[in-house]
Image 1 (cartoon, rainbow, N blue to C red):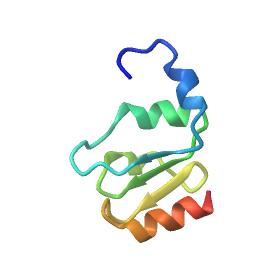
Image 2: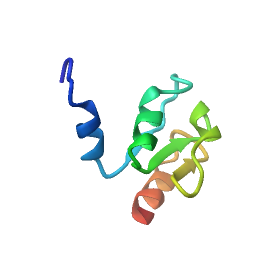
Image 3: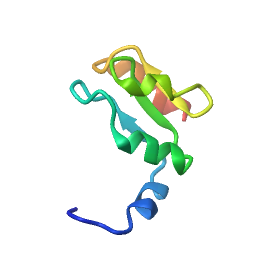
Amino acid sequence: MGFRQDVPDLIKAADFLVFRSRYEPFGLVVLEAMATGIPVITAATTGATELVTPDCGFVLPDSDDTQALAEALNQL
């Protein structure tokens, strides 16, 4: 998408954020999503687990657990 000045509007248009990175310990995108009220699905292997509570999203046991991801998506 390149440089955008309307990033807050793009984030608000999303229904949820899935952040299950294997390599990035914490992404700013998690804070951006949470600041706009977007539910976050992340994995226990990321640093975002400190912030994501049952009130604002789901923490998957593993980044590669596709079954847990499917269950979290169904609950949203």
